[in-house]
Length: 103
Image 1 (tube, rainbow, N blue to C red):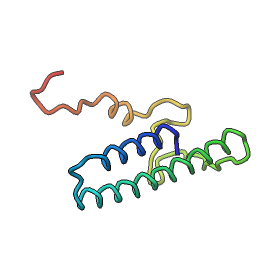
Image 2: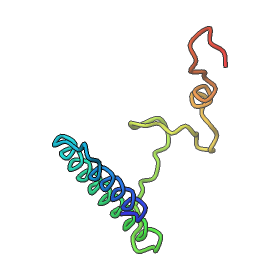
Image 3: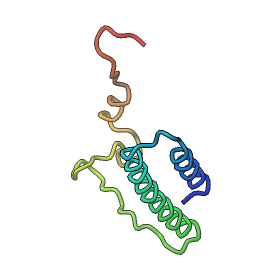
Image 4: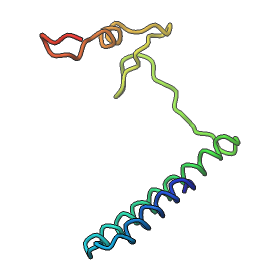
């Protein structure tokens, strides 16, 4: 877990435990929050480990080559020459604002 995230978690728990009006429900909430923070810390540690391996070149991701044409679940917005297809140009120029609204 990042050191700053650990400091934040410790500071939050310390502040909450030192308040005189801490109720049983608040303690239960603190325990749940601590579990969540531990889980987030594990995910961040795993991400850091994988990123370190990728940066060092120890592992490589095998990425599938894109399929040309319009077959498949997701179509490429580029044609064989690398130019945007007409439907992609139309999507990029479309306005998502409701009628009558102006920017």
